[in-house]
Image (tube, rainbow, N blue to C red; front, side, top):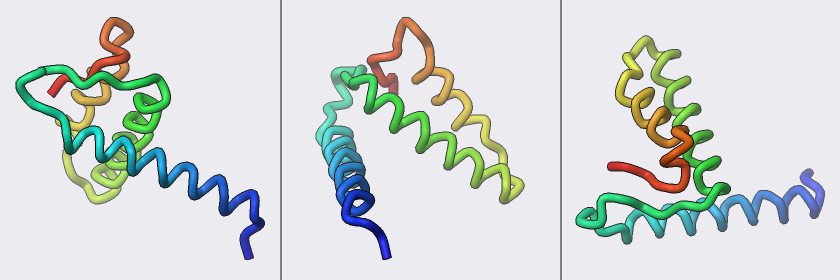
Length: 83
């Protein structure tokens, strides 16, 4: 059984993910850039790395995912997500 502290931590992570998903879903493509915080950038990088690992494990190409990871990680665009 999980401790109370662990459950609260997982709930906080879920709330942050849900807020980020809402932000992305409400994003207007005409703006070209999505303003993200450093924490959101970290979440995006982790999610993309997990997706990349799944693709590679399945023997699929991950070129598109690699390009997005590079765009998110660029220092001059670290707070913007280019679509």
